[in-house]
Image (cartoon, rainbow, N blue to C red; front, side, top):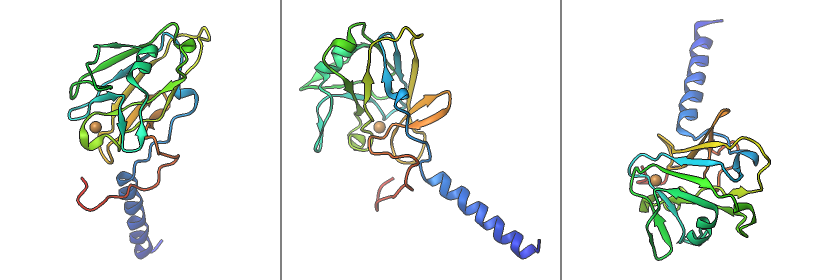
Length: 182
Ligand SMILES: [Cu+2]
C-alpha cells in the first residue's frame, strides 16, 4: 500500500473512532432485560448531580405515579414524596426489590427519570414490565448514569451496557448537540 493510501485509511479510522466516541452507541435493552419478577433487585448508583426520581410529569410525559411504583417496589432508603414526586438525594444509591404481589397489583410497568432539573426530560427511562415469578433465580440489576455524552441512564448487563433512554432506538442515532448544551 502506498503511504498516501495508508494515511487516508488512518484518517478514516480516526474519524470513525472519534464519531463513535461522540455518539452514544449502547444498544437498547432487550424485552427480557426490561422484564422484572418478584424478588428481582434493582440498584441505582448515580453520580451527583444525577438522582433517581419517580412520579410527577415532565413536559407532556406523565411518569408512573409514585403510588403505583410503591405497589411494585420496596425502596431502600424510602423516598420522600412531595406533590407526587419522589426524588432521592443527588448521588444517592437506591435499591428496589420487586414485591411478591407485584404481578397482580394491577400496575403492569413503571419508568423513572433523573431528578436533576436539567435532566428531567433527557433521562426519562424505558419502562420495566412486571410479570409473575417463573421460579428463576432473582436478578440483580444495576443502573448507573452514563459517564459521558448525553445524560442518560445505563443498564448494566452481562452482555454490556444498554441505553435506557426512553426514546433511544438501536443502534442510537448520532448525538446531536444543541447550541450551548454541554
Ligand atoms: Cu441526571
